[in-house]
Image (tube, rainbow, N blue to C red; front, side, top):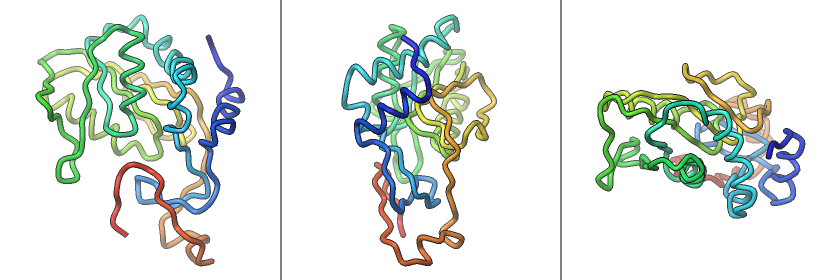
Length: 194
């Protein structure tokens, strides 16, 4: 089943996953919009529908393993792997750096698809790509749900997002909401020092 971007946006709105306010993003930048993918991904039918877009794009690629950064990419990576019937592993932060833990390994030349929930600057995805490459495995592509950069982030591999949006973000110094004194909220999973 294919969904239009308007249908996807409606799913985000129906599940209260599209938040408006003053937010600190994982990248450290500030924005007046936040996509809380976990609110959408709590519903298996939406998870299946959104991840099927990624699966359909990569279905003819040779893939051995799907990998995602914890915590945001876990549900996306697991569902994409389930639909592709491939192994799923994840990278998690250890002393602020993503790494493979829990006995997860990648073999040389293993073909790996990277998945994520939301991309703004792509920092976590680039970290996972580095993990794959440092294990002499091969990155096949990148699939994610929300592209907040509206296509500006290029990972250098085939990539697909289910929805592309041009959501403005600002450095803390240039943020008008900070200047107005509006409360800053960090709703995501990664703790950032202020």
